Structure formats: structure tokens, C-alpha cells
Image (cartoon, rainbow over all chains, first blue to last red; front, side):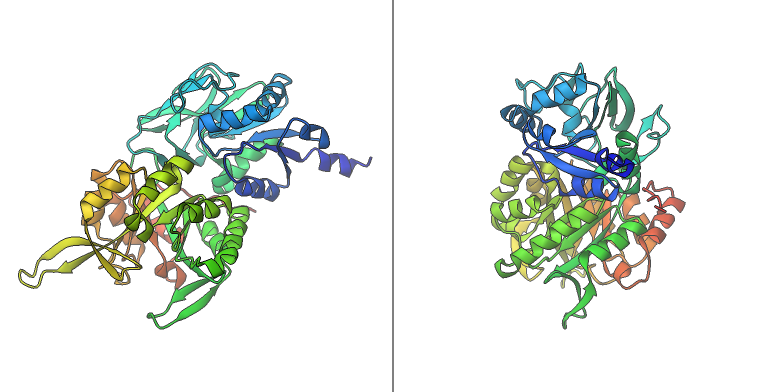
Amino acid sequence: MSDSVIKEASKTVGVINTGAGNLYSLNGCLRRMGFYPVTINQPSDLERYDISALVIPGQGRFGTVMTNLKACALDEVITNWYRDNKKLVGICVGLQIMFEESEEDPGMAGLGLLQGKVTKLQSPKQPMVGWADVQSSEDWLNNQTLYFVNSYGVSDSDKSIATVTYGQTFVAAVASNNMIAFQCHPEKSGAAGEEVLKQCLS
Amino acid sequence: MEQGLKSRVIVCLDVAHGRVVKGVNFKGLQDMGDPVELAIRYQEQGADEIIFLDIKATLEQRANALEVVTRVAENLSIPFTVGGGLNTYADVAQFLNAGADKVALNSAAVKHPDLVDEIAKGFGSQCVVVAVDLNQEQDQKTQGSSEYEVYINGGHTLTDLNAMQWLTEIEQRGAGEILLTAMHRDGTGFGFDNELMSQVSKKLGIQVIASGGASKPAHFTDTFLAGSDAALAAGMFHRGEFTVGQVKQELLNNGVAVRIEKLKY
């Protein structure tokens, strides 16, 4: 196998089908960044491709996404991927399901990879819709202006690497093992969003 | 203008038959170009969002309109809303599944208010924008300004709705944002109706997008200082009079927090 082929293969990114929204924006964003997105519908799909990273897209509510993931045994796929220290990126609800539970759908367990609970935001207007600067100790993330669309969030986490303030301060991004998850939507955040995603996937 | 969130500058494009069109003095439609190319041009200028309105998505043109939406979703890296001619839950589902981030409902929300609840439940409040066209007519007797009247069907049909009650009802039914057009300002170039925008923005717990009347960057400053969360314009950008970048520079100069798009090279 030539070097160029190996390089190509390492650019294949698996996008988890959460059954809760279209993937056009995310796939388009990944393609513009030079990645090859493939949709992961079931655990066996992982064997069909040489995937360098998994992405959990950001549409849908907590309970719907968890129900759909469990129905396809994709919850285990994500958990194992995380425990194996492989590259994992979560977006919006993809961050929220990393935690134990959510006020959005009480009684429904999240993946529980991180400790804590998703709560209703105490924001001036709901849902929070729009662009905000995130504060981070990571240079590549600090002061980036990113697009948020959410009514729920995580107010604090020991794995937080970035925060945002809209009425209250809450978690904008978490990192643990080789996983980074965002409350915002980098795929909808213009050039800044692509820069941020590239940092996680490269 | 809410602390923490940037004031959003939104560009509105009219789409028909898969092309961007613009009415010229109501006499006809002029082809302005490919929706994806124009949307990307405004994105590069720094637009925070694009709204495709009046998409003329009648059943005959449905496939065409959906194809445009998917192409936009694959190519645009900022949020976009699609509205005009969406009348049922199935219509909305089709456009969201084709890649739209949000849908804008206008006449359909007035005729079938439950549709707002159903879409909010099915897809989330964040993808429901309700567009409201208000007109303020001069009172002939007192020479003063009358109450705001709610119009539907592209501004052709007067309803008997009470404007403020309708706006409150939209929020209660689960809309995520209101696109508020002051018809009496639309096309005048006199600036947004900031008295209205301020009143509604303070009253509601959802975001208000000001629309109607903008012709220069200062109009955006005025409406954000009055309390609008976002503001929309079409003509001043399409005619090439101002760029989104110029509007944002003006806003920055006046202390309004906006997003500055990074240039990609």
C-alpha cells in the first residue's frame, strides 16, 4: 500500500446515525475539510471501513437519540470506542449523551461516560440561538465565536475545557480520553467551526 | 441585544424554480443567480444566517426546491432557514429532512396554529421560526398611528388577529424565533420599526428577528440598540449598495457585539 493510500484511509470519519436528523451539513463540512464521512448505522459498519474518528451529530433530543442508539447497539459502539481511547467527537446532544441523565427526558439514562446531569438552561431567551465566544484554556478554542442552538446544557463538569455565558455560564466543550464534545455546532460555525473540528479530527 | 450572544445579521433570498429571484417593482421576477453561489457569497461577507423565503415550493416544484435545500446544506457552513409555501407537517418534515436547519411558517401558522406545536414537539423549538407580517396604517381621523394589523398570504389578506396576542401565542405554542416584518416599512428604506421591535423583544422570551425597511448599516445599529436579537435585509445587499461586512463594521464601531467571519486562505 502506498503512502498516499494510507493517508487517504486515515481521513475516513464515521458519522453515527442517531436517527434524529439529517447529516447533510455535517457531511458537507467534513468533505470541505478533506475528510471522507461514512455513515455508521450498526456495529458491523465499523468493520467495513478504516475509520480514524467517530462523530456523534448534534440533532435531536436526548431521549430520542439514546433510544435510537440503543435500538441499534450503537451505544456500546460509542462506549467501547471511548474506552479504547480512539478519536471521538460529539456535537450538541452528542455532548449531552456523554453524561448520566438529562432533565429533557427524565428516567432515560445517558451513556454515562462523564459524571453529571444535563439541565434546563437559565438563559435570557430560550432556546439559545446564535453565536457566542467560548472561553477556554486551550489556545485553539479560546475566544472562538461558535454557533449555539440549545435549551439544555451542562452547568459544570470536571472534564470541561471550555465555557460559554448566556445568562448563566455553562460547559461549551468537554474532553476526556481521546474524546472532545461540543455544546455548540462547529459544522454550522463558519470558518471558525471548521478550524475547531480540524483540531479534533487531525 | 442579549448579553453573551452576538447580534445576528441575516440575509434574505427569494428562491423560485431553483434560482434566486427578486421582484422588480412587482412587475416580474429577475433571475439573480444560483442560490448556493449567492448564499456562499453572503457567508463570505460575514452573514450570520441565510433565509430562503418564498421558495414557491408548490407541489409541481417541490422536487426542485428540495434539491436546492440539500445543495445549500452540503455547501453552507452557517445556519439557514427555508420558508414560504410550507403548509403541513409533511411539508416541513420534507424540507428539514432535505437539510434545512429551520423552517419559517407564516400563513400556515395563522390558519393552523396547532402546526407550530406539532413541529416544535416533533423536531424541536429551535427549528420553528414563525414569520409575522404586521402593518400599521395611519388613522384617518386622528392622523395618528393605528394598531398593528396581522396580514397573511404574502401581505394580501388582513386577519382579525390581535397582533400582540398572536405573538404571545406563537411563543406559547413552542416557536423558537419570530421573524417580525413591519410591512409599512418594507421597501421604504426608512429603517426598521424599532418601537415595535423593542416592544416585542422585551415582551417575549424567544428571539425576535427584525425585518422591513433597512437600507443602510446604521439601521442595523438602531434596531439592535432597541432590543432586536437579529435583523434581516435583502435589497440593500442584493443591489450591491452595502456588504454584510460594512454593516458589521458599523455595528462594531457603535459597540454592538457581532461575529467577524475569519477569512479562509
